[in-house]
Image 1 (cartoon, rainbow, N blue to C red):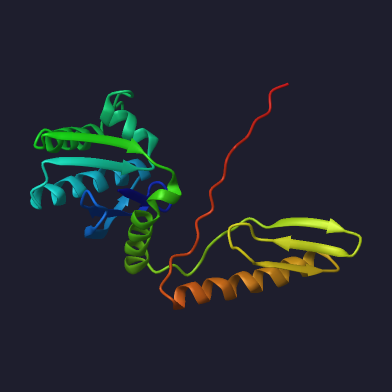
Image 2: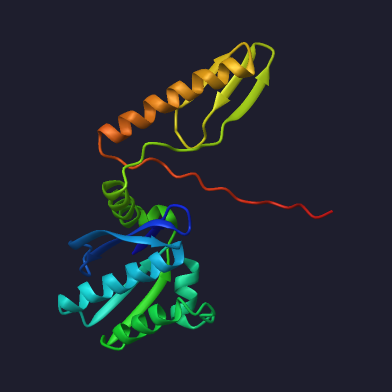
Length: 199
């Protein structure tokens, strides 16, 4: 399962992939859920997945998600402190009581790519993306300036000046995104981390 939110809170959707014990795909779900936070979307994805699995007669479920918060709260490691999330947590526990056995585990994001794709397709289908914002990394050398957009593989430019390199890489990024949209593929999302070095 996966939940996606653009803005956090912002336009959100869920992605669900249900397989049998031999990894045969039984059902795929991608649904837009309106404005929500990322954590609410993760819960809504799990609720939808459990409902669908129960409808197929499941008695044992193995839940996989890339949300550490969801795993810890469902397992009881973290308390559900936000009042808005409490009803979602209670709905999940109610559904889990209907199966004989269940497990939940966190998997790397790349192992959850299909559910992520379904969620992002659902947002794109409802709110088509016509803009994006990505970081540009500049590398200056004796022969000019190289500009790279790390979130878009292969999108880079080299020019005599920083301004010209930026202009060129912007044009290449636009071309790259137009091709993705034409193929019906979601645009890459950029993840940022905040790092603080202590002395």
